[in-house]
Length: 187
Ligand code: SF4
Image 1 (cartoon, rainbow, N blue to C red):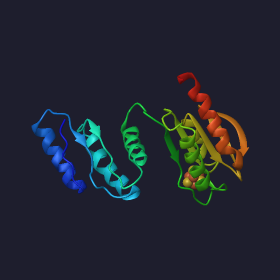
Image 2 (cartoon, rainbow, N blue to C red):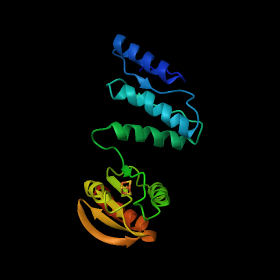
Image 3 (tube, protein in one colour):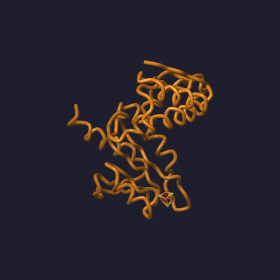
Image 4 (spheres, rainbow, N blue to C red):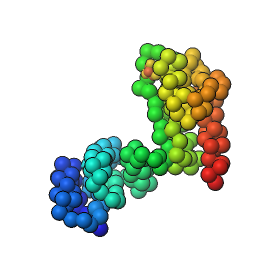
């Protein structure tokens, strides 16, 4: 296993490209001293991600000035996004707009916190958190579980089927219960 790291994303990419052309050894990828959660995540995703998409690299390390658990979480997210077979939860959500009539931003934050609290992050499912009944249902139906926001409430979809409408303050709990049910057969 070889590892050449740099705090410069461009240098790290070029160094690993050169190594991959000259050796058969497995390569360990990482942008070192990448910074805090935000800048370190962006640098790591660009550096590690651009190499992995071209088949370069065998193991990864995300280096953040943060709780080591954040490093693992970001590394898993990078691998999850790039993996053809999902290795963890894929959450898609819309950017909100004038059509959004629920507090989607705080709903998503509460949902993500609950997912981590309940240890559900590794569940290989796609979840869609969408803001309206116009463009939301398509994405929500395409996910394993999804919601499309209404007027202070949201429609829940499970595997493409409409399930029921719930008030906003119940949505996070309903989604978490659905995910726990999906987890059952894998325990
Ligand atoms: S899904 Fe609906 S609320 Fe969200 S950005 Fe698209 S149109 Fe706006």
